[in-house]
Length: 131
Image 1: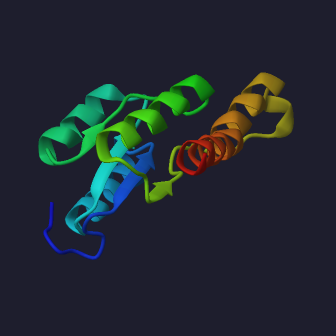
Image 2: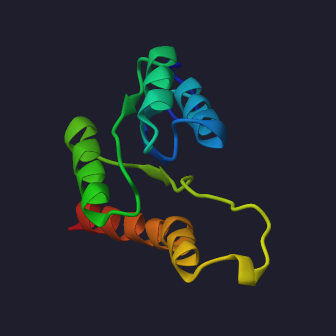
Image 3: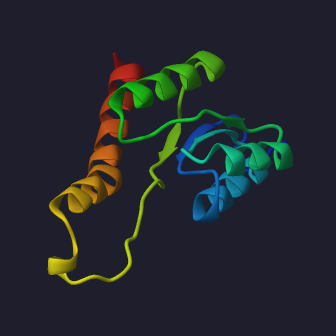
């Protein structure tokens, strides 16, 4: 962790942090001095990132499951005593398809991950931090 960086002493949670853009966000906050907790469903990529950045904490979590989000927030606060910043990065961008090529279930899953998960994380965080 970078001592005295812009985010020194801040506790940051990044969803979908195990690979891609999320891993880049985890690296940037860690290099800026933050205490970083990140979650992802991909445990192998996430474990590799922890080996690269041993000061980070990985907590497996499917952000579409409210009970897992509750555990994620509770564990983060238990470890660090607070939570200063949440980056709702977890999401999915499907390949281009015509509406008739998609299913209602597929669309529901897309909404759950890209929309409802961000709402749930904000709701659970507010309850954990402010109550």
